[in-house]
Amino acid sequence: MSASDATTFDFESTSGSDVGRVRKVNEDSILEATQNGLWVVADGMGGHAAGDFASQTVVAAMGGLGVSASCQELRHQVIDCLSLANQQIHCHGEVLGRGSIGSTVVALLAFEDRFLCYWSGDSRIYLLRNEALRQVTRDHTEVQALLDTGTITPAQAVTWPRRNVITRAIGVTLDPEVEMTEGQLQDRDLFLLCSDGLTEYFDIEELSQVLTMREWDLAAKCRFLISQAVARGGKDNVSVILVYVRENGRPEIEFDRHVSEFESQL
Image (cartoon, rainbow, N blue to C red; front, side, top):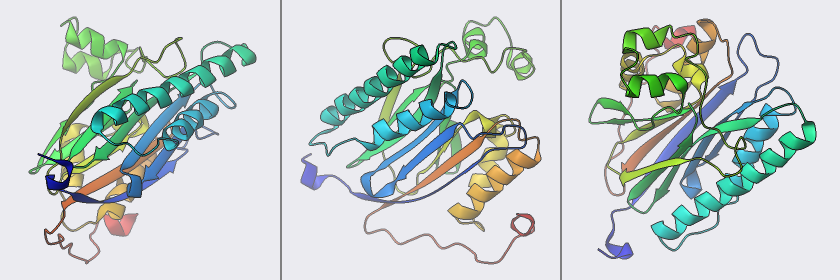
C-alpha cells in the first residue's frame, strides 16, 4: 500500500495537569500537539529545579520533532530527541551535584494509519478499543520486575513498600533506556496518557468505566479523572491526555449533552 492509499485519521484531544494536594511544585510536563500527531507526558524526579527541569527538557526535545517522510525516519527522530534530552538532563544533574535527576516519559505519535508509543519509567499509555481497555505500556519499576518473575502476586504488588521505585528514566543513565511498541490505528480508538499520579488512585476497571461513558465528552472525562485523583489523596502531581481517533469520512460520534450527576460535582 502506498502512502496515498493509506487510511487517514483525524484526532481530537484534551489534556490537564494538577500539582495535587501535597507537592508544592508540579514536576509533570505535557505536550499536546494534535495537529502534528504528537502527545507527551513526562513526570520529573529530583525536586524543584531538577524534576521540573527534567520533564520540561523531555517535552521541549520531543516538541522539536521534524516532519518525517516515513515511519522508519520518525522512529530515528524520536530516539534522537530523547537522546538529546537525556544528555541535557544528565549534564544538569552533574552541575547540581545532588544525585540522579530524571524524568519518565510516555509519547504517542501518529503517522498516516499507524501509532507509535515510546516510554521510560512508570507513566502509562492505555488504549480503549471496541469498549475494551488495555495498558499499552509496561511499567519500568521494581514491583513490575518482581511480578514478571513471579516473586510477588498482583495482590501483594498493591501494597508493596517499593512499588513506586522506577528502574528507568530519561537522564539517569548515559544513554536513554526507552521501550517502543506500534500498531495500526482504528476508527474510534481512545488513548489515555498519564503520570502515576493518576494510576495511584485508579485501577484499569474504573478507568474503563470512565472512558466508556458516552454521556461525557473528552474534556469532562479528563476533568473527572484529574479531580478525583486529587480528591482521593493527590499525593503526587497528576497529568492526563486523552486522544480520540476518527477515520476520515466516518460520521462523528454524538455525545449526550445533559450534565450527569458525576460531572455536576466537578
